[in-house]
Length: 161
Length: 161
DNA sequence: GGCATATATTTGCCTTGACAAATATATGCC
DNA sequence: GGCATATATTTGTCAAGGCAAATATATGCC
Image 1 (cartoon, rainbow over the protein chains, first blue to last red):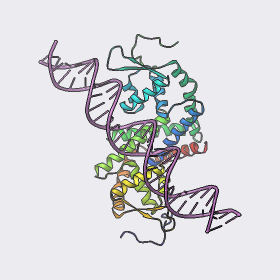
Image 2 (cartoon, protein in one colour; image 1 turned 180 degrees about the vertical axis):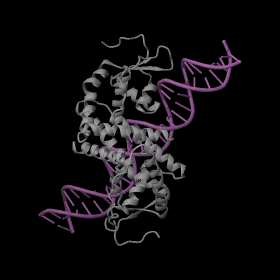
Image 3 (tube, rainbow over the protein chains, first blue to last red; image 1 turned 120 degrees about the vertical axis):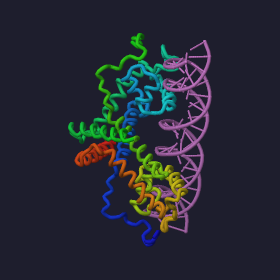
Image 4 (cartoon, rainbow over the protein chains, first blue to last red; image 1 turned 90 degrees about the vertical axis):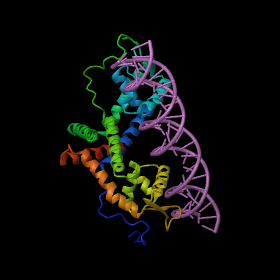
């Protein structure tokens, strides 16, 4: 039952199998291309930020001053990973850790002026450019639908647990 | 110009900011939920496979006997990563490395009978269940559109290099 | 106040994937 | 044949994220 067919070393794959990537595979591919593209765009503008660091800046800018934990939740990475990313972002001068006034366990994470400027002048523009380019073959309606469908898929995956 | 507003430790985020996740973030989230869900489903069926290993089995089953490099391309991981995943899958008894008859550099990767059985009886069913569940709130048409839109986004990202 | 429990941050350990170097072999050209 | 170049696999190194343990602090209940 196992290995017949020794005459062809690499048999032609089951003809007709149309090889449409599955949804999981497709998400994998689109995500990694988008990450690559955004990092490349940032780097081409002289901004040294990984995709994760880009997200952290984005959320920090959006949420104002927050704790590391809130930021970790917003970016959906682990608390430990956040600590290390904050180390780097602090070293790069994009943000600052301040003790929280009421809770001495917690931090107050804030963008520096440099951080705000990099976000506003470069990072947000880069990501917008990539996202726009990636959707250039979709109509307005289709872009909305894509967003909507992905959100519904996400909800389905999270409910069903 | 930097840090006014010391009275609120965690200022309310810019009200009205609707917080719609960006496409990049959304892809991140959907992908990681789907990976998590498929791994959980596999594990609940007693199958010890990471998502990557699941993809490798899937492609190996689909393509028949292939070289490690072809498999790496199909799954979109690095050749080095593939070597290590093959080590594990071989240890688990799901596949076999055989020397290629015509090319002594290359391998011929083949599923074992166990590998075929696990794929057919369990793994393919698990992933199908998750993918179906994740799309349960989408109509047939919407599922097709989602696939189509993602494919077009992928092409846009890859062309525009 | 004192104590059990919960939370915030940090650190160590582990696995994974990317990238580069090493090795073996193939291929095309002279 | 001999050599330059390309390809397949493996291995080492590195950065990243998940998880668990350690530490400090907060909170609720007695």
